[in-house]
Amino acid sequence: MKVQLRIITEIGEYVGYPLDVTMEQYETIKEKSSKYYEEGGFEMITADGNWIIISPDIVKKSILKIEIIKDVQ
Image (cartoon, rainbow, N blue to C red):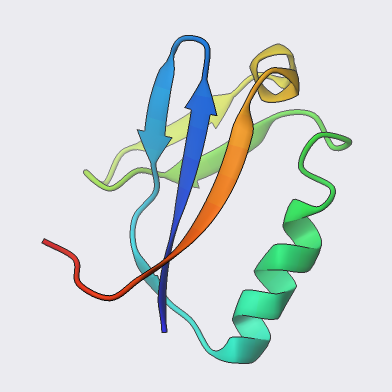
């Protein structure tokens, strides 16, 4: 399956690079994301290949969405 992380914040929306994962890896991502707010900042590779680091203050006011995608353009 292919998944993509999307972070929606007050200052913008950030879309992660699409990842091919197994069902086991998907479950691990879901488990780790449950600590998204507790662990402070967040880092990811964006869909355009850039690396972003989001500060803990922004993370507190954001939404992390893990999307299962079928086609990536």
